[in-house]
Image 1: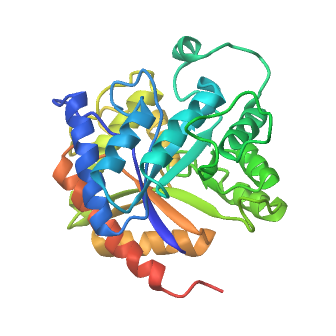
Image 2: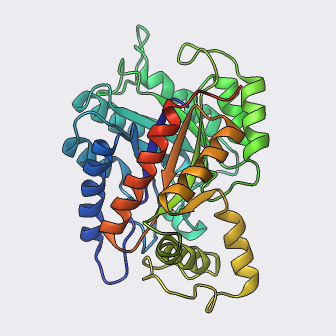
Length: 335
């Protein structure tokens, strides 16, 4: 494994404000850079009371300005919500301001409910134009051919690295076909992880942007000094996910001792399955779990994420994870 990175959803905790969440994002990013994280990604979600990163490019700019060397990017921008030209201009501007530090991960889902998607969309065409939109966007970042009438300024010639994101087999097939790096959202949808990686690796076609397959997988992390403390802290994310699955999204709840008390068993089973690609516990437990995950899937990179109500505890969790992952990056790769 080459690198380890961090995905931040800018959680808005109960009792706190959106402003607090964005301040915490900048604080966490600065700490993450010191911990050795290679990338710091933010995700586009809309109409979500518990997530503050809706204007993703704006938040990326704030994080890039507050850090010095760490790559900063989107994990991801939900391309159906945007005109490719506007995305090219936004990320071309970011790359111009912070050269060599900006990533652009692209997703095919709207990142919200359908009513909000209708409010966001340029149009609600029934056909899927994601592959064409990705290729259009790549073209804006390349050097423009002579006579091109529509250009991304800033953007053209910046060659911003583009990733395809996915939680099913579709993204794996597209990333392989286009010769782009692929990131799998196993932190909330792990069911097709193994199959998707196999498809991507076996069907990859080298491109001008990438010579060989490059895979990043995501995992949840909640680390603390003891297994019991970590389980207590993780109850916030379990509650939040259960409420989302029940159609009641809200701010990130405070942790509880008995997380299953107020969650119906059927919903709890879904949550456990969705969040199963994760490491929760003491430093030793987290290291062991992450080592197994890396050995099983052999990613080129691992991206960790996790929502904890207390900001200081969340920073400490990612510090513990970084200590484990730095050691695992140094370890010889499995045969």
